Image 1 (cartoon, rainbow, N blue to C red):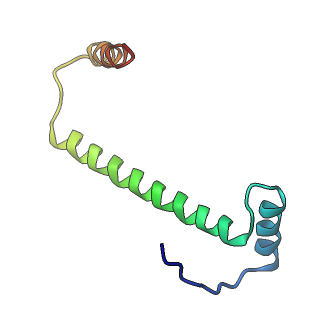
Image 2 (cartoon, helix red, strand yellow):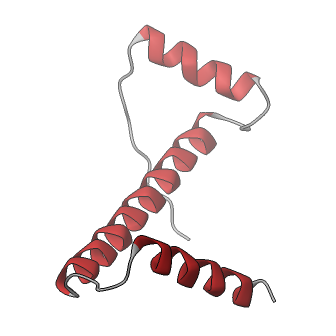
Length: 84
């Protein structure tokens, strides 16, 4: 995958934080740390989009005639079915 070079400006405190993350051994260098941050942000935004879509679908489906206990029992049955 082609890479693009970026130049960023950090406060001293931010630079110290990045250095500490690399020195901890979690990352080989600053670039790995920043790429991980971007990946995590992408995943978070994708999860938020999925959640918003699910909430929109749930709202559009209307109110349920089921009691909270019925809903809970149904959810437990689904989980036990998925777990085999």
